[in-house]
Length: 101
Image (cartoon, rainbow, N blue to C red):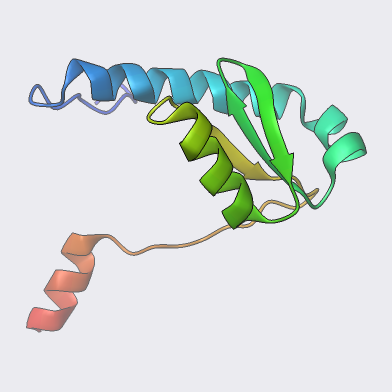
């Protein structure tokens, strides 16, 4: 494999476009992270079309507002901290195989 996962041909063009847009938003966040840390440390930010669109201390309030205002537009959300939160989620296949054993 060349390092890039193969795209499922059954994925919709809209899904693929949204993934690409959100990747650009994610890159924007990391390119500007030092500025976000100075201005919004320990707050939640929402980024769309490579620009900051909203900030809040409460992630649920932020999510509600952004989804109300922007609908299905691709938005990258992040909790601005100096240490990223890492969440390990086992794959469904792994969980399923353990349950069968």
